[in-house]
Image (cartoon, rainbow, N blue to C red; front, side, top):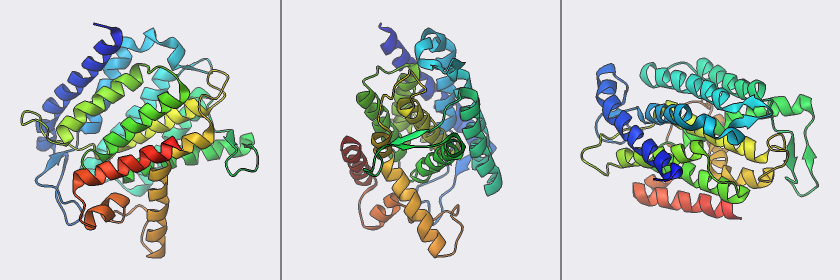
Length: 315
């Protein structure tokens, strides 16, 4: 068996194993999503998909991380363990939020802390936006690049979190983002991409109820924010000249990869502001909710949104 196939198969079955083990435990601990007027699923669903994916990534890091040094070194720093430290913080607080409903302040501080771990741990930040508005290359000074990177990490994490409202949608979106980044950069996938891709396929088997032997699970805030974090890390690495000495993907092109999630987040936040409610409050004003309310089925909604994202990323 080839190393790439071995890694993918390992990730798939480790994720399924974690889901099978964690789902009954989550029910006993009350780590479940209960149906409401806004959440129209059936029954209490364990919120362990994100935890299962993170455990799988940790297994991959332990088993294969140091066989890919060219992939996990950034600016001479060990990017692998910086990545896992930030991910662990995000998943831990996200899981506590899923169970106990933490306040907005703790969630915001956690996401800012994750951005700071990436910036300080890897000396990695957005310093060039490229020809964003067709007026020439936009270069950010160090004083501007630092807070801009924090805002970018924070924004993309929450944009992906807000789109986690239909079975299979966010997992499919991240798979499209993974494939697009590698196609545009012409870089072969490393173990993180392989593990994440195979792990997402295993989660989708659970989330979509494809087998009676695999319990249905949701990502939870822990999982949706972890996936947004991974995507923003890939984009930072692909668009930064600090990694490998050259940009693998133009910054403007990378923006299209996350264009729809950002568009949804911005306009949802604006609507909430106009209605004088908290931008962090939950409602049914996201694009997938609007499509469901128009009468589209869950799976047709997913297919339409993913098609739109693919078309935007291909422009």
